Image (tube, rainbow, N blue to C red):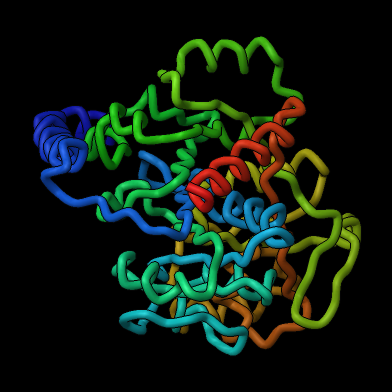
Length: 337
């Protein structure tokens, strides 16, 4: 696979040139990046795959919801519906996408909508929100956010990657200049401070940018639609871990380090489970899955012993207060400006 990717390097150069030229047109104003009165906070990445966008959206909601009317706009990846749709708790993941349904289920007071046309979605949400969070919209240059948050995972930094198909970048590394802040996500537990300093020195940080570090935090409880139990409930049991996310390795590592006994059924990100796969999963005695996967599975597996383990973004090294203050000030500057 690595040899094939290297052989495709000329196509990476071509793709990088095309995306770079597109960015050049937007940077020069020859293509319009529309500005809105309502502050937009964009969460995105340069790379294909999971960098922790959903936990970051939830983290933003958690500390902004008491001060602002929040709306979340997502394209609703792999949904079967079209156009603009405001999410409610009776929708299924097939109708609105797993992540938007997760946001709405966890924060019912927040307006959540899906729309592939971000401009249309923003225009429909402005009257309902003081702040609009844009999920996975870093490459969506048709709108100009008040805050651009760029995520890059600790073990797969964008500075070490290449444009597709040789690497996993959606655009050249120079696109990072558009970020107002960058967050290195999925830092391992007890990461040495010297390692964080090393990354900080290597990252291309411009004068207008901030850099933060975050890790994945796991809940102490597991949940399903009707109950919650301590995670330790699974300690002396054998169960099946089912994942359909881009990078399940941190979760697998976490459960392994806690000496849980499990087998792992791994599926691609946003996987649409087939009838055969659902039948096979129904035969499992106990299933543990991610919150996002639970949104897709709960209507298909009428199984009492299927639980999900919530995760959250944890900002490291006492940076949380500074990060939250930076986001609030950026929002207020836009609202008052």
